[in-house]
Length: 275
Image 1 (cartoon, rainbow, N blue to C red):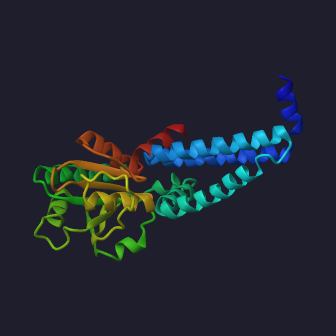
Image 2 (image 1 turned 120 degrees about the vertical axis):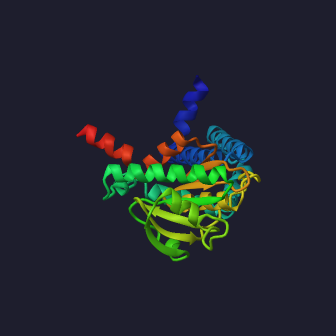
Image 3 (image 1 turned 90 degrees about the vertical axis):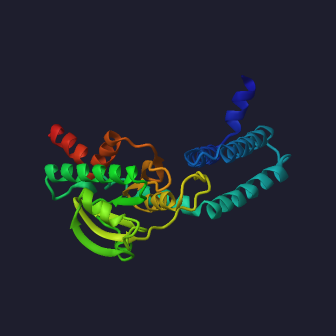
């Protein structure tokens, strides 16, 4: 008890603030690596931070520079570690910052001009189309955007501005069609463009079973607040991707639910109930 009192007396406010900042930064880094299933790196960071905090406490208790060299090595090593993490995971950091910047107005972006019946009909057509493509083992990539459409995506494809339907989806993604390799961009119940090329994710933790379409779906959802739907050409499995997180083996019910969320149907219903 006496040792603890001495420790508190010797600690100043600046040291406490320093420790709090270190702990908060460590929590953020641990959460970052946990989201990417990199547990080894998360464990390494946890051990490093605990060691640094322990050395700092020991230095404060002894009131001497007995561990000056060790603390300096850990301090400069931490700076180097931060730079290495930024360089290695720059794409992931960029996507995290983008999602954080758009978090405040994410709900407001789902206010569409079409009626709920129009959107539900579009949901049904997309689900039917995905099911038909899945049965025929035809690959497809569908990107459903909020009210703001990333202009750089539309420029890579061919403008359509056509009402979405099961038949049109099958025509576009037919292997003999000229636009089947790219993605289609959907806003409300309209296909804005087809044959669009998307940025591929650079993440290393993506399963090797997933092909280029899945990497493209993950890549665009890391950059933009969109929903990507992927139909595998090899297995016919339907997957959805949001915020870089992939959900596989989508049933018609689950797929319909994900598209409704992207269209804002459920959100609008809850908002009207609150009113």
